[in-house]
Image 1 (cartoon, rainbow, N blue to C red):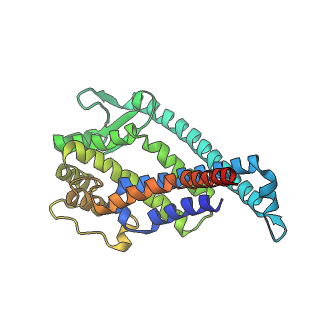
Image 2: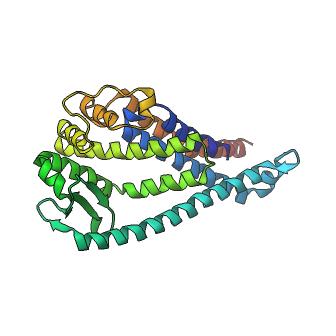
Image 3: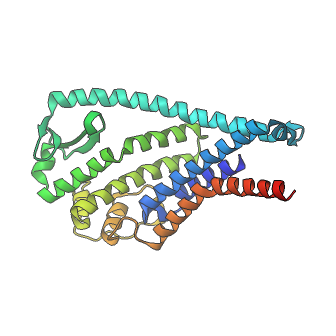
Length: 295
């Protein structure tokens, strides 16, 4: 159980507190997912060990308490809390999205050329609504009139990336983890950082489709940030909230989403973390077989 805590807690803290995830958002998301997968694998392995040899697990006591059994029970309670929180959040989100899709049918008009729903609005709006048949990318009249064709394509590519990559499910899982964790500064920063990384991942998808400079300009105009100047590297304090300048800086200064040595190291760490429980189980099994054969 200690391995589950180390894998999940360490990856969550590293992704939430450090600054490198803004240089490699996809790698940071992969590292977090690997930590969760590794923690779940370790939990299942511990459960199997208890089912196969309950007497050995119960015999390990700390201050007269079966420590391994208590740790296993607490871990499963935490996993159940995350699961129920996710189901509750997902059910509520589905109801809200269904109501919103009904409103879109009433007030919006489909654009076959843009493959999007267009809303009458004086504000430049763009967002996505997941749902059946892939959901809807939604834009406003003001955005169509005030932005160039390539910029509109870039914004739509960003929103479609949210839909095709099921980012709403990742966001709901993040909310479930945040709800299950004790309230604190780290939990708040984790939620903020995760949302920022999701947006940067969608930026990368738009950049691959429409080009980095067009995507950066569209992002700057959409958020009323000056696009004539090249954004400076984000400071440590600013990087905590991931302002638009940090996203534009990443788009302009990185030809690919995760092409740096930092990204390569993060992907390697993600593979190692995901495989760690399996490797440890395999090593223990081989050791037991050798002892049995050579015994």
